[in-house]
Amino acid sequence: MRSAIVVFTLLASALAMQVAAQTSAAEPVGHSSGALSRDEQVTLVVHTAENCPVCRVWRESPSGLAVAQQLPQRWPHLNVVYVERKSLHGSESELLYPAELQYLYQARRERYQLSPPVPLFEIVRNRQVVARQAGLQGWTDGIVPALQQLEAGRPASAQSSVPR
Image 1 (cartoon, one colour):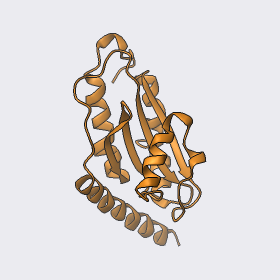
Image 2: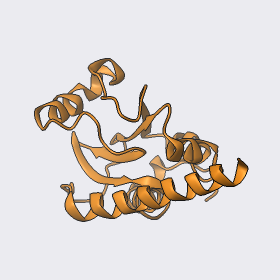
Image 3: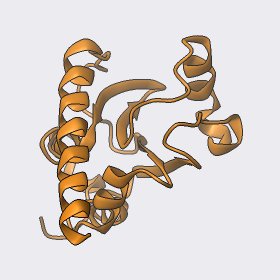
């Protein structure tokens, strides 16, 4: 039984990596030009599903949810928002999005994309998605380095003194 779970997790991870590669290649996102201003807010939107095995691996990994929860302490102007739908095969609803991100929900609804691949990570700056990656590799190799690069351009007085 345990070997079946390991095989299933590996297959789910491989599928997520394939989705991440397809998402990053097929869905380039706009980039806000220039460095962050001292007080500019950035939002990381984390899309998951309760019954998603890859999401579970991300949540339980020391480089997954634990890192996401520490990011706002490291970078005080970063807001992390979790959008977790009930089912992997279900759709996101308007109620899952906070008021300040309703425009993202509306844009997804207009494009008929209410069931994005999960886990999906989006960096939002000035109401624009500037980075979007799916899967475990998308998190570690795409989103975390993109946040580090973005925050490195912020004036030093706005960065936290938490060691890197």
